[in-house]
Image 1 (tube, rainbow, N blue to C red):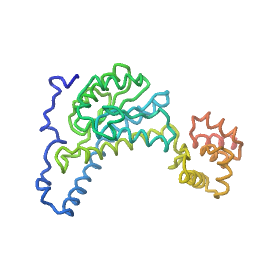
Image 2: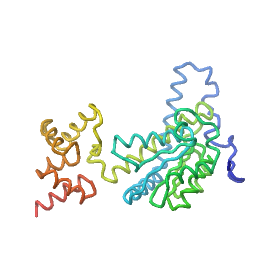
Image 3: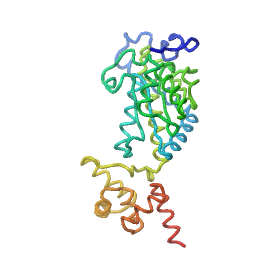
Image 4: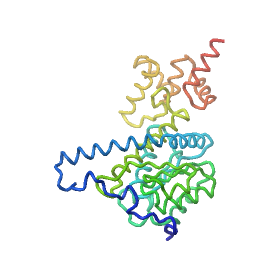
Amino acid sequence: MVRLREGEKAVLSELKTESRNPKTLELDKMSVRELLTVMNEEDRNVYKAVKEVIPEIEKTVHAVVDALGRGGRLIYTGAGTSGRLGILDAVECVPTFSTMDEVKGIIAGGEQAFVRAKEGAEDSREDGAGDLEAINVCERDVVVALSASGRTPYCIGALEYARKNGACCVGLSCNRPAVLSAYSDIAIEVDAGPEILTGSTRLKAGTAEKLILNMISTAAMVGIGKVYKNLMVDMKATNLKLEDRTRRIVQMACECTEETAEKALTKAKGNIKAAIVMIETGISLEEAERRLSLNNGFVRRCLQTWKAEDFN
């Protein structure tokens, strides 16, 4: 097992995520209302902290859009809460944006560690590297390593391997400065202050990570054409609720009746993008699919080029 090297061993007591919050020194004596109030007040600091790192998040989004455009992947890797949040974001991209292998989450200790903590899994650099080797990480990929402490050996090993194989390396840490940043092409260091429960990074640190992952994946999916206006036009209807949502998406996009949306979706075999283009232009399914392909799946570009051609 390969642990942190000398010079990288940040003392836990010096980490902001491990320090005591002066507002909650008597947490066990607070009433429930007092506890919830201070917790809510502390959570406000998360949003301020995330705002400060938007420039680094923006760089990450551009890197991910470029990677996905070249057939690469967005890969999250981490241990414990951080690893679970990465998997959660990756899994949620499947129904929302119809991703397959484009977004992937990996957790130290394997999939079983998602539901049952596997102590010590985060302490091996070799495992971090080995898990990325197992999925053939390459120069087309972006690897985002999540570490609340910013010093997790598993994450450092993962980024070392990713960098060696030419991938873009992003370190997302909840301490500043973070050891992980030295292994990153893009370093996101978000500091939301000490937790109300000392060292419990599933709280503010976890919330900060979740917000940032939401921003990265959503903005990246917008960037590769999976959104039209503010609508999920690459969603797949896998249940009754989602079938109803697809109809409403087409209705809102085209400002048409439910009947018109339903007919177009039936012709398009559930393809929301094609249904929208068909309604807006009056062209056939085959032509709508051809134009969408020419415009890399961007509905807006497809409609704009059609209108330009029609005008000329």
